[in-house]
Image 1: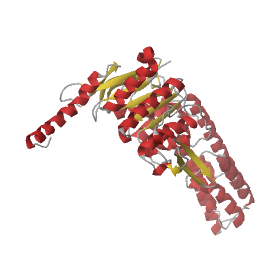
Image 2: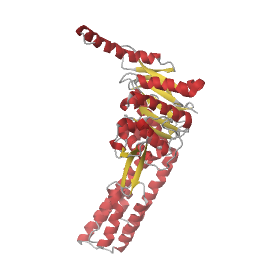
Image 3: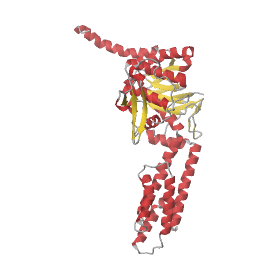
Image 4: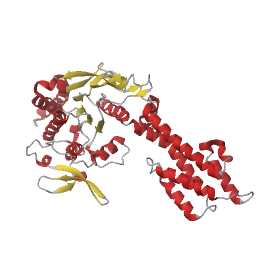
Length: 444
């Protein structure tokens, strides 16, 4: 089975068909759509793989959080009607939901509702015009938006029963939504998360698995990819340690790095003395203290977040492997991975990418405009794969539709990278203009 990204007039990309079953390298000038392809491919595939998270977030935002707010506010309104210790016990269960720090463990919410029922059973009949009657009236009104006007006529304990039934229905609906995998909910998530109007247009941007679209609005379904189960988008080594970022892909990456499977066996140094690259990195937790640690070959250890950004680039790949999240159904999307690397390390990074694909089967989609990195990918892959290299690696170049156009077609060149270097050589022509001025001044 194979994955294919298909794009047609989406942002700066006029057309592109990018396969995702080996190592695919995108090249082109700034603004040609490389990052668009990289991050949107991640967004679509990761959302399809983790569709349950979309359902959970939607359920929390629309139903659980409003219910928790109502329960907390209503419970506080019972002050003076029940004893202080019981009220404290009730609000303690509800407070994490009220402030939004609890979303997955609904057992506590069920427990709180049971306590509420017991509390309401303990409240005797209150005849008007006692001031307590006003509190009961307000208590009822708070739940009108949840259980309807019945809140005004039901016995107080029955209100808690109706709330419990409402929560049970929410959970049943969530289970059904996870099974149905409807495109409509996916589109709503896409619109809210990425500001894409009414959602992503699958005719303009989609990923296909054996010619079947992942996002199918016609059949109202989001398919479950079989080729890829783990997907990571690495756009900067500065992502390391940022697990409370507004960038969801940074949070997911860091949470994945903290898994403690400690898988070994893959040679990250190639058996050569590569200085700092011969060391290793890990996430360590002691008591309430945790950090990413780099262990230098001479035995000394350092806080990895304080080390060079280039070292972080290698450490991320190493720790993903040792965490046990990389295998033949993993896709790593790398956006300009060479940006923080010394030229020598660029070559070693390219070698590491190729070895991860060769030995483990990890798939790569890489956006780059580094001649050193692209040349390294080509020559190291030829060395590693031999006659099979044509099936493992391919290059795509963004070419402008017309001289004055801001739209680009991504053309596949397999291992023929001379057109890519023709594009890079334009920068050398620019440099020659200035070197000519130096010649005239006798400084060259």
